[in-house]
Length: 105
Image 1 (cartoon, one colour):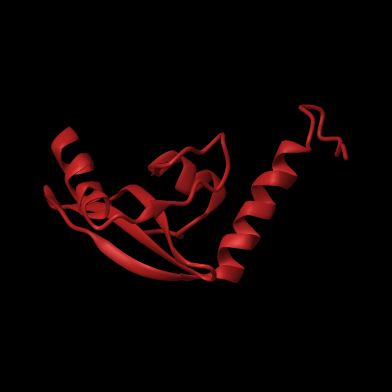
Image 2 (cartoon, rainbow, N blue to C red; image 1 turned 180 degrees about the horizontal axis):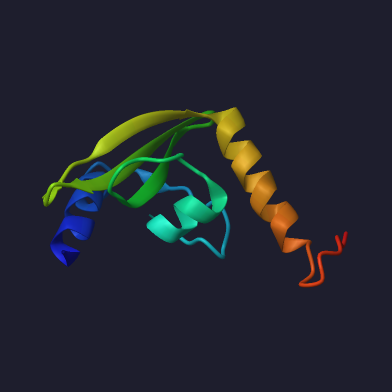
């Protein structure tokens, strides 16, 4: 199983793509639980992990690893800059919420 998680991301390493970290609490790899919690990519059957790569100033790609029927695949999706900004802002806003539900600035 670990081999499947490493293999798709080695493709990005060999092409010198820069990983976009959306938030320090997420890290470089978005796992299935984070995808559900923050609804990054919606409901993708077998979603296991994803990484987002910055291609240029306003262009991003995501490499998504779904495991379907015991086979790993790589989905590569273009992500508009607006989507990245919206998700990043959502994560920043969540940081500002206290455990009691109050919002801090």
